[in-house]
Every structure is written in structure tokens, then in C-alpha cells.
Image (cartoon, rainbow over all chains, first blue to last red; front, side, top):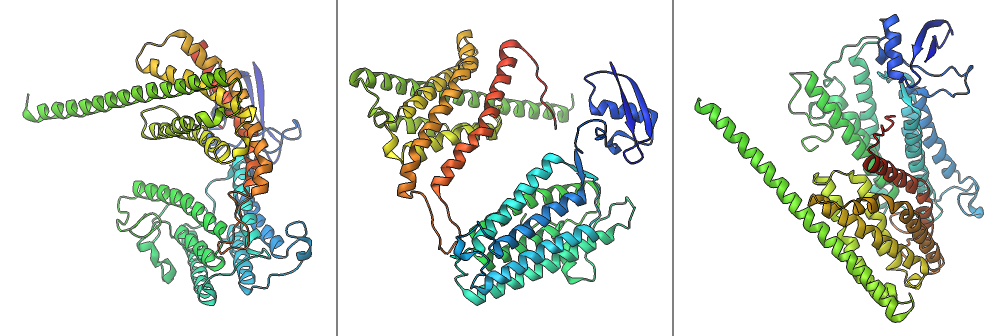
Amino acid sequence: MGHVEILDAKTKDKLCFLDKVEPNATIGEIKSMFHKSHPQWYPARQSIRLDPTRYNASVLSLSLSQVFLTEYAGPLLIYLMFYFRVPFIYAPKYDFTTSKHWVVHLACMCHSFHYVKRLLETLFVHRFSHGTMPLRNIFKNCTYYWGFAAWMAYYINHPLYTPPIYGEQQIRLALIVFLFCQIGNFSIHIALRNLRPPGSKTRKIPYPTKNPFTWIFLLVSCPNYTYELGSWLGFTLMTQCLPVAAFTLVGFIQMTVWAKGKHRSYLKEFRDYPTLRSPILPFIL
Amino acid sequence: MASGEEDGTVEEKETNNKKRTKGTIATAWLTFYNIAMTAGWLVLAVAMVRYYLQKGTHKGLYRNIARTLKFFQTFALLEVGHCAIGIVRTSVIVTGVQVCSRIFMVWFVTNSIRQIQNEESVILFVVVWTITEITRYSFYTFNLLNHLPYFIKWARYNMFIVMYPLGVIGELLTIHASLPYVRRSGMYSLRLPNKYNVSFDYYYFLIIVMLSYIPLFPQLYFHMLRQRRRVLHGEIIVEKDE
């Protein structure tokens, strides 16, 4: 039998002293015991970790905005390293040179714009409902984002890169699609943010606003994912690069899973949820 | 007593009958499948022993059994299907990984890189696979027939302790032996420039495959060890949730 001391994470005040704790007690059981003495902190709202000043344990989780900033800053910087042909990536004679194809410069601008937009949205637009993410997920997500960014960037910025077959027409169309979907994605994020005033817990059905880019809410539950897919399809068309197509496909599969989940929870929560809407692709998926 | 109630029970009986028929068909198919696979790998074992007794050497043995090995190993893809439709209670991913690694070794290493077919490491892993599969499929067969001799259960849950590491050694040595030939021939590789703006180097891919044994093999091995403790000693092991 042992005891457990619970301290406030910020002030280090002793909040609670739990006597007679079984050696193999789980975190869940400790949270329940703490809840008994502090009824306002029900177990789902507790986050308990070992005090780093007393044990050599590192903090086990990061806040969600920290996670996203790390996940998005990585691809931004990694792509730029390949764009500027930093040494040890390509043959030494290409170090710090730039591609002779103008589409490569355009692609760098689009890719960078996309991740800068995401970083700014994380800082100023999104409101997160969950507090933290476990370390294993962060490791997995960063490997995914950073790995794919490096794989894409390697080929797009390669000295032996082949520009799109249909040349300027293809690139122009791709750019229009990309920009359209970036604006669309941003519009949806703003609309979702405005659904819920700060601090409120009420959940509402999103509807089209005056902004034409939100009219897609008539047909789709998660248009942010629809626009995201569109952006990456545009980027694939622009660069004509198989790794980009692969990244688009994997992202599409993941976003479809998320969209279906969100759609299902909307249907469960709201009796009057519009029946015309599909999760991610109008009428199809 | 009302006709409504009667219809209800008749419907229930029909669904139960359908379920029972599906279950019987599944059991019949699985029994046939496992008997066929046991027989197939037994044929392979006999062929290998006969070859070695007649020729006194392992050279040329692989070519001799290649077609049979490819046939029965490829047929094992069905097992992924069995898990997917739920007639076998195993994870699709675990089965998928195991079957895919076998298919990869057979078709993309030993079959396509002829120069390594007479290596001793090939004989090592083929022998290990044969012993393992005969034990495994006869275990499943007897299980389905509800008459499982203890020695088969013992074999299934003990021999892997030696067979798994030996098999891994055989496979890794084989891939390693193939590397110089892969590099020289540039097989299965795609170079830049090309219109898809992608490249693939089979040589480095094989090296990555070899490295992937490091995280994957211990997971499979400890999974089997846990199963062994549960089946042979009745221990209940609670898996960590997070």
C-alpha cells in the first residue's frame, strides 16, 4: 500500500493526499479517488502527470496548438531546404542552385502558402475542444507530415525534374483549382469558428453564409476536407509528381474516415439534420 | 397465440437457421482448406527429403520444388480473406503482414534473383517454413474436427520458439546475398528523369526491408509467446491499453 500526493500543476499547491493506494492502482482509479474529494473535477477533466522536479519523468503530452505548430512548421521548412538545394541532398554541383523551371518556383510558393495559412489558422482561427494529444500520436503524425513533405520536395526540386506534359495550360488550371480551394477551406474554417462564440459549449449545425464558398454546406457535412482534397489535387496537377498524388490519396482516405465520423455524430445529435448532405463528396461519399 | 407472434418466431428460426448454415459452410470450407494445405506442405517436405537423398546435395533443390512452393504459399492469401469476412478470429493486419512477407520472399527475392537459389540460407528458411506450416495447418485441422492431440498443440506453441528466429536468419541471409546482383542489374528500379517525377531503387528498398525486421519480428515473436502462455498455461495476460 502506498500514498499519492496530487499537486496543482501551476502553483504546486498540495490539492489532495490519497492514503492507502494499492501498488497496482490505475490512473483511472486515482482520478476517481481525487474526484471524491474534489467533486468539480470529474475524471474526464483531469490530466495527471508525474512532477518533473521530483521524478526524472518528462511531460507526457503537449497542448494541441503546440502539436499542430510542430506538425506544420516541419513541412514548411523541409520543403524550403529542398527548394534551395541545401548541401548533401543532390549532387554537389547543384548546391544552392535554383530550378530552371518556373513551375517549380510556383509550386514552392503554393506549398509554403498552404502551410503558413495552416499555422496562422492554428494560432488565430481554430478553437480546440480537446486539450492535449498523447506523445505517440505526435510522433506518428510528425513522421507522416515531415516524411511526405521530404519525399515530395525531393522530386519537385530535383535537377532532373520533368515539368507537366500539357505545360502552361495544365499549370494555370492547377493554380486556379488550388487557389479556389485554399480560399474555400479558409472560408469554412471562419464559418465554423463563428458558429460557436468563445467559451460557449453549444453545438450547432453549420449552414451556408453570405460567402459563396460556404454554399457547399448545402451538399456536404465537412467541406473543409472537400476543399483540402481539392487543393492537393490542384497541387498534384501542377507538379505532375507521383509522390504528391500518393500524399493526396492517403490524405483523402484519412479525411473520408474523419468526415464519415463527423457526419454520423451530426445525424445522431440533430433530428432535423439536412438529408441532402454527404460526408465529404457531394452525393458520392 | 396470435398469428403475429407465430410469424415472429418463424422469422427468428429462419435467421438462426441461415446463421447455422453459414457457420456449417464456413467450417466445412476451413476444414477442407486446412487439410489441403497440410497435404501440400507435406508433399513439399517429402519432395525435399527425396531430392536430398537421391542427389546428396542441396544444389538444384530449390528449382525442383519451386512450383509447388509458389503454389501453396500463394494460396495462403486466402487466409487474409478468411479474417476479413470473419470466419477466422485473427487480426487481418497480423495475418496480412505474415502472408505478405512470405509472398515477397518467394516471388520477389528467390523467384526473380536466380543467382541466389542455391544458397544454404534458402534451404534453411524453406525447411523452417515447411515444418512450421505442417504443424500449423494440422493444428487448425484437428481443432476444426474437435479432436486435437496434445502433441500437435504442444508443437504449435513450442516449436516457433526455435523456428521463428531460424526462419528470420534464413530470410535475412538470403536477401543480403541477393543485394550485389540487384545492384548490378538494376532490376525493378525506375530512374529519373521520367514524366511521373518519381524514382525507385530496389537495392535500397531491400535494405529497408531488412531493417524493418528489427521492429516487426519482436512484435510477432512476443505475440506468439503471449498466446503460448495463455493456451498452454491458462495465464490471462491483460494488454496495455495506451
